[in-house]
Length: 123
Image (tube, rainbow, N blue to C red; front, side):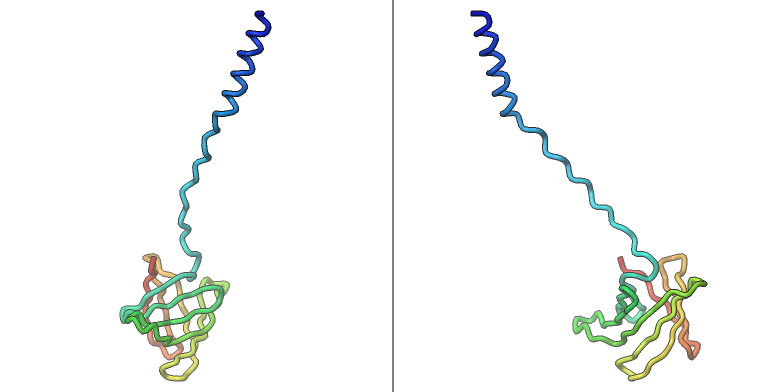
């Protein structure tokens, strides 16, 4: 009888252990990566927003109309300078702009006619 009692206890323990669920794995928090280089969104003092992604960029108004003001391509030069080939929808002209990343989240740019301007990274 002791064997039957022991087997019954073992069977009951096995059935109970099958009912216990393992804890759900905890999801890891999502780590926000900082954009690399000029990739991402930048804003000028006039409220225009430029989006740089995969070698192309667009500049649009942030006034609700989302009007495209300029577009073009960009590439990073060996010296760390970013060269933009820009088409202005306003002036219907193409120009070159050279930009360098500043230390305070700014993109410091000089157009081919010498005009300087700065864009601030939007996060």
